[in-house]
Image (cartoon, rainbow, N blue to C red; front, side, top):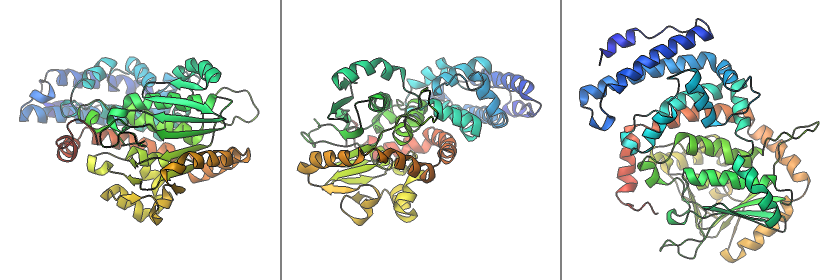
Amino acid sequence: MGDPTVLIDDTPALGRGFDRDGTAAAAFLSRMEDELAALPPKAERDPEQRRAAHTVTNAARLVRRRFIEQHAERVHGELTDGGRAPLRLHDLVDQATELWPGLVPTKAQQERERVLPQADKEGREVDLGIFFWGLLRDATAGDLLTEAMRRPTPQAMVALPAFRSTGFADLGVVTVRRVAGVSEIDLKNLPFLNAEDDIVVAALEIAVDLVLLDDATAVGVLRGGTMEHPRYRGRRVFGAGINLTRLYQGEISLLDFFLSRELGYINKIVRGLVTDRDDWLTDPVEKPWIAVVDSFAIGGGAQLLLVFDHVIAERGAYFTLPALREGIIPGAANLRLPGASGPRLARQMIFRDRRVDAGTPEAAALCDEVVDAGELAARTTAAADALADPAVLANRRMLRRFEEPEGRFREYMSWYALEQARLLHSPDLVANLERTWVGRHPGGKR
């Protein structure tokens, strides 16, 4: 390996135009990849080799950041035929590897990282974080990207005819059942108390698409399925947050979990689907949504409650946001919770993992009703009847436009992409998981 200091001295000065900058950046990044490839895998490096890798990686990331910061709109335009071809996250990355080698990791590089424990990864997802930070912070590119992520998934389009005919879809860890105009999504990741991972996020997005696309559905409901875990056997559980065992094992990804979750199914619940309907006013396809919280809503489960139109909680249920203790950012809770609860309670929940119990004054920020378990079904039906009023959607759109403008959400997501990627590949995350979770819960079950 060459002298890293000499290599850094050759960092290209960008700002000479898109084509020249692209050529210079690609050449420099190719050299950095060669230097990194000359080192042993991360887990086998000695201290000097770790320092060299850090120097090379930082130099490459500086060039990536400068390039995407200056040319985000043009990059997105080149990838999407001037915005005419809406591309999701993976498609953008795949195209970018062809046009600007080194700007983002290749599919092969991502796959090699995927099979490694979190502690042994090179951290190439940080490069993806830089890329999407640049695209999302640009108003033109970012708006087109968030819009592309709100289009129906191909899997949902395939499943839609059968769902319209039968009112039922089995997506493995998620089922959808329509009864009398109300479609209930049941989350059934039973071994992990409905904790979310990449597979769950993908299934939930398909389910949300089906509910929104189904003309016979007036209201959507999300509820946790009945558990088989010894501690909760026979009880429903809303959600245990992120699957921490999968995270520790390196099986939770920036694109398929953290970004797809917020830009995909959650944003579709908030803002509806983007379709190609030919109408004088291109409103999204949206429905009112109810969440039914049995037992608890931990982490990502609590985050979800901030976007539902009506939340009904079982008496005795509770809510927590332990993301900081785990070493990550709790999705878009940092954006939404202060407005719902006030800044003090938001900081207590995010910084100190404060538990909020259903029925307390503080819980009013997270749920609308608290009822006995036996009343949940009847209260859900009553809430659905109220939300099916045709005027609800217009009022919902007006509330959303001014509570959380799309530009504000997009800007939040740009920094979320970058900060979450950095946290995912920091030594602190693995240390936090080993200290607070993995050692005490080797099976990954709460």
